[in-house]
Structures are given as structure tokens and as C-alpha cells.
Amino acid sequence: MIYTKSDLNEIRNHVVDGKITGYFKLANDIVFDDADFEEGGEFYNDGMGWIPIGHNNEIGHEYSGMLSDIHFDGNGHSIINLKIFGSEKRYYNSFIAAPENSTIINVNFINTYIDSYNGAGVVYAESFGNTVVENVVIDGATLINRGGAAKPSGIFVSYMKGSAENITIKNSTLTHIDPLTKEKGYGWSQAFFAGRMKDNCRVNNVIISNCSGEFYAYSSLLVNNVESDVEIRNVSITDSSITWTHYRYFNLLGNSYDDGNAGRENVLIDNIYANVKYNYDYNPANNVRKLIPSETGFKLSNALILIEQSVSKDIDTSINPENPDNLVNVFIIRKNQEGNEEEFEYKKACASNNIRI
Image 1 (cartoon, rainbow, N blue to C red):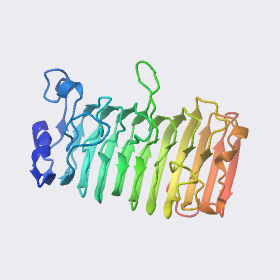
Image 2 (image 1 turned 60 degrees about the vertical axis):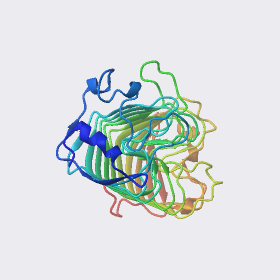
Image 3 (image 1 turned 30 degrees about the vertical axis):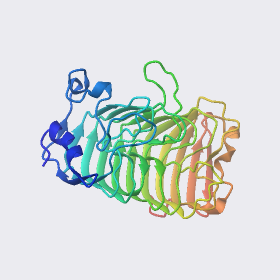
Image 4 (image 1 turned 90 degrees about the vertical axis):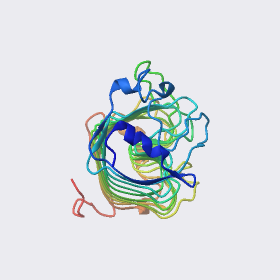
């Protein structure tokens, strides 16, 4: 049982055959204080805050720590005020660095703060196996992704592999802009849910509400850099907004790095309700903007999308897909900056198809 912050930190020391293993269950909420991360505090760690479980805290642009095969049961409790200040050269910045075949269930992450140069995600950074995450709430998270290309960030996870079910993300922010200096980092591959989704992922029942993002290139509202054989079902995104700050490839619901050239197959996003605002602080004339990538392997079905945008409708025509057969029962209402509404219907309106509103 985990009773204290020190107990939580000790998980990293349960090592068998070179992997972190064991069954861990929270007995109560774990609450960090600002003093814990200040000089002299238990989790100062040379100014880097919480060391992700499995991380050896060595710098470098490749992960050199241990994998984790743990069962972590939050027992309905919360981890509150966790802070990570990832250095420019520390790879993986999350609660758990690199699960392999782990299970993470029944836990709330409240007011998590991650400032990273190499991608970020609240729950874990990159899974290398069939990691299962269920019944997780992320509330009040702030993630700053200052890193460059191929360093994905998602409020839920950075690189997903495995499954996720019953995930709530609310009142949270993901940005590549320094909150004090307003300097823009190169935060590619950002999304509210997952910065990258590997092969054979399964996602069901995701609620995202009152979230905001300032995203750079190759970014998306929901997921990014999606590989093959992925299913994402039953997603609600409400009262959320994104500002895109780069001219390259961004889609509303899913993205692949090459957008049309990557050859992804069997990617399904099904039963989606989204009510969002989006805008650009970059000349959008040559941007690539679609609901999903133009690859034939991507399918979007049973979706109601309400969009309020800050640019003229004549700039944003590419919201219509190159492959309309990829959209089944999709209904879109878009309001432009003049207050005019346009409707787009693919196959047939989905409002009668059990969309959650």
C-alpha cells in the first residue's frame, strides 16, 4: 500500500530482472507541496522535480532507464500537485517513464505541471508493450512542450501503445509557448489525448472538456502520428480551443506525420462529438487542414462536429476531405469569424445515430 509521497517514490526501487515490477495501491490521496520541489525539498532533484518512475535521471535524447511492468491501482484517490521540470536534455517527462505491460487504473491526477524540452504526458511517456489504462481523470494539468521535431506531447500520454478506457481530461492546457517570456518553442506533434499512437491501440470512452492548446506543426485536437490498426471510439470534446502557430499539417481529429504518404491502415475514429474553437496566429493560406488525414486507411464515422473559427471561410475550404468515402455519417457545422454558419454532411447526418451530446 502507498500511504505517503516517499512510498510513491519507492516504486522505482522495486526491481526484478532489470524491470520495475509489483502491485501498488494508493491508501489515500498523495499531496505534494511547492516546497517539495524547491531547493532542499525531498523532490528537488537538481531543479528537475519528480523523476519519472523508471528514469535514471541521466541526460540524453534517448531513454536509458528501466521499463516498468507494474500494476498501479489508485483506488479512487488522487496524486495532487506533481511537478516535473525536465531539463533540455532529459528524455521522457511523465509520472511513469516507460511502461511495458503495465496496468494503471482508478487514479486522478490533479494540478500536474510538466515543463519539458522532450515531449510530455501526464500518465506515461512511452509504452513499449500492452499497457492498460482505465478510469483515470486528469484535472488542471499544465504541460509546456518546448522540444523540437519528433518529441510528441499529449495531456494524457506522449507515446501510446496498448489500451485506454474511461479517460477524462478537463481544465487543462498544453502549449509550446513559455508562459512568462511568450517565447515559442518547437513543440511538434501535440494533441489533447496522445502525441503519438502506435500500432494496435484501442481507446474507448474519452471525455475532454474545458481544455486549451497552443500547437505547433503536425498537431491535432485528439491524437497525432497515428499508426496502423487503431480504434478510437466514444469521444466527447467540449468547451475547448486550439491555436495553431505553424503552417504545416494539422487536422482536427487525427494526424499522421506524412499526411498521405505514410501508408497507415485500419484506423477508425467512431462516435465523436466535438464542440470546439480554433484559430491561427500564422498566415493559414497554405495550411493543410482536414478532419482526418487524406490517407485511405483513416475512417471517421458517426460524428457531430461543431466548429467556431477565427479565420475567413474562403481560407478554410480544405476542411473537406480529399477522400469523402472516409467519412461515414459525419455532420459538421462551422461558424466563421463573420458569424456565418456552413453545414457539411457526409453520407447522412449522424445526429440520429446515437451521438452523445
